[in-house]
Structure formats: structure tokens, C-alpha cells
Amino acid sequence: MNQSVFDAFRVLGPAGNDLIESSDRHRKGRAVMERVLPGEVVYRTNYVADLYGEINDVETPSELYARLRRLAEDFKFQNFVVLFLPQVTDGDIRPSVVASNWNGAILAEYDRLKLLENSPIIAGLRRSDKPVEYDLETGGIKRPAEEQNAMRKLFVENDMPRGVYFGCHDKTGRRGSIGFSGTRSLPSSDEKAILHLICQHVFSRLYALMSDLGEKLVLTTRELECLVWSARGKTSSECATILGVAESTVAGYIASLNRKLHAQNKTQMIAIAYELGLISNANVDLR
Image (cartoon, rainbow, N blue to C red; front, side, top):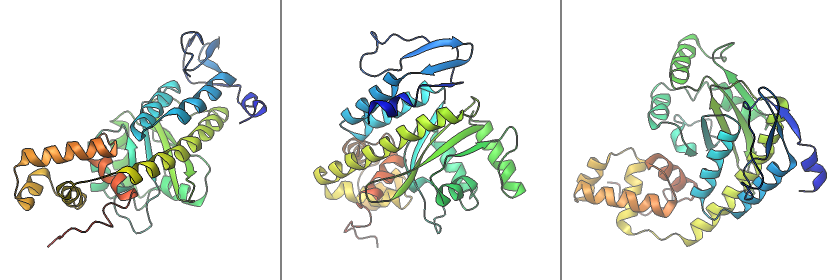
């Protein structure tokens, strides 16, 4: 990106209070900010430029997720999620989630309540790449009444009353999104412009890292069997019975899979495996 583009993103936004960080202390890309008014921050050219450099330098998906978590913190969001857009026929959101710092119980409850089908956020992302926002403490979102109440209870009680999702796409044209949520106010237009720019770069980098991961990945037969059965909804105990091994052995397989796939948990492991085609192409006897 050239300097003129970076200059266009020197903007004001209500991302926090009294933030002063020294570029000398954060040479490797932490935000360069200065206080100008209470509750307002100037995001300088250096922030976007250094962040682009950091994203380019990450070598694994887990490093990229860690940087994305810091990005959320920089903008005073508590949560982030990276997902590929679900198919219209999909009933659950979890297989589409590649990375998130959400409590796993939130995703499980979201799917139990069947909230994906009428999701206005997913519908909006399917229509265009424009940012899609929600605020459950003001106008709510367009859903059937019973879903509206369930959605508000689930997200407000978990400190996720407001959020914004940015449409992204990878090199192949596959579409996805990176979303941020929390208790802060909805981001300004300028903040959204910066976040959208960075999110697209993160999504493109994720595709490159995933491609490299798929080319180098080697799984044992048992790991692959454990992965496929886990993707079919089996618990570790059930996998152990099916495979004829101890539950502690299955736990070892899961730990190894998480390490090889750079996943932080079982849900993320399955999502990454789907994306790499490991499950659909697996030669595993499911009888």
C-alpha cells in the first residue's frame, strides 16, 4: 500500500479513553496513538502500516489469530470471530467458524436454538461485502419474536450486545467474514473503514497460511479417524468406544490434531479440517 492510502486513514474514532503509546516502545507494530480529546483517538499512519507488516510476517494461523485478538483489543472489542459464509442449506454455524475467542458454549447454544437460518447478519453478508452491524440494546435485529428474545439473552448476557461484521474473500473468491463484538459503542465510519481494510488483509493472509498448512500436513490413520468421528458430533468417550482405545488415547489424538492444525480447541480443529478438505476426502469406514 502506498503512503497516500495510509494517510487517508488518519482518523478520529471513539475507540477508548486516554490512550498514549510510544512508538519507541512498540517498534514492531503496536498502535501509535495520542490523546486528543476524552474518548477520542487519532489512529496514525504508522498503526496501519505496522499492522500490515505484522500480518505479513506471521508464519502460522495461530499467530494470525493472536494478532487478530490484539486488533480487537486495540479497538476496545472483547470478542472476534473468523468464519466462512455458511451455505444456505447449513443448519449450524460451528462448522463455518475458523477461529474465535467466543466461549464455546455460546456457539453450541446458538446452534441448539437454530439461530443461523434467520440470521440477518449472515443474510447481509451474503448480499454484499458492506459491514453489517447489530445493537441488541437499542433496535435489536430483525428476527421472529421468539428468536429475538433468545438472541438478546444469549449475547447480552455474554457481554456481546453490539458488534460489526466485515465481508471478506480469499484468493479463490470464497467469501467469509471477520466480526468484532463487545460492550463498546458501534464503531464510527472511519473506524469501520480501517477495520474493513485490515480484515481483508487478514483473510487473504489466512488463505495463504492455510494453503501452506495443507501442503505440509501429515496425519496418522488414527488421527484422521478421530477427526472424522469428532466432526460427526461424537464425544471423546464415544470416539474411544468406536476406535477401541482408551479415552486418554483419544485425548492425545485431539491434542496432536490441534497442534498440527494450529487450532485452539476442538471446534476450531474441525472447522480448519473442513476447510482443508481433510474430512470430505478422508477414506474412513463410518459403518
